Length: 377
View (cartoon, one colour):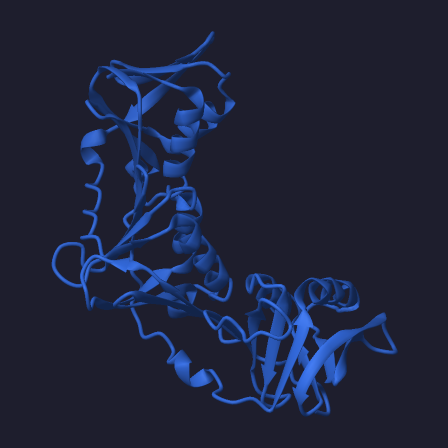
């Protein structure tokens, strides 16, 4: 095998493919990155039995071939190479990387022992890369991080014709985003639970492309897998097993109070006031007609308070939240104004975005946040 490729192209592709490699591979070959040179250029691939990553790059292939080398080592080398074309060639049981006057020799791993990459399921539909990345980012922040509750570490993907609904929850908050897409067939209906971390990384890495293809097997080849493809990048991951919570029942159908606050100043005020909040202590919000007061801390410790303009329809309300969870929701709505809908101070609030203070909320993104019960409340 021998090929030449631009340094930036190679470094970016190797870094992307190597990101899925396990830190502690159960077998040595899974630490390897598969490098295949052929008529269509060079393909780099990694696989850990759960997640696969495959990327193609243009290269001048002098001699086709297929080798397996340490993925993390190759990524480190490519990242440090000078800005000159790179030549990679096999030399017996070794691979030689040349770039300018730099020369590296790597040992190969037994390519015959490398597992076959999973087959990409049949395409289900597509949507713009930037829209997909933004929607996944809005939802995945609410996914759980506790691996002992694997169902909550996923994002529920529900396909219903031309609509896709993404949902994630860690029991303290819930994020739901609805978006339109172009299905491959009319009336398509499917539900999957995708690992949030893999979904986030995939969406982020594919956002530069005009289109992302989502491939979700509903039976037969590829069942239990979901695939994402954009440009010449392709990734697959195994779906999570288990029943996602019936989150629709958590979203209130009516509100006793609705407050509207300018998002930017609200975020800044939460950040300032929460500086005095000890770890896991809440920030208190008091809404009255025309004003919002934020407070944190107590008289015996450091404390802070700040007031700002707000409109309120309904009853006055005082409620407390985890400040980081509140910030996550306010920043995720990506709107000039935030609407907070309340039923009582002990029940979840719903955060949505508004384009102006007087318009109705967009409704495509909802962030439900559990309040923190205050002592004596």
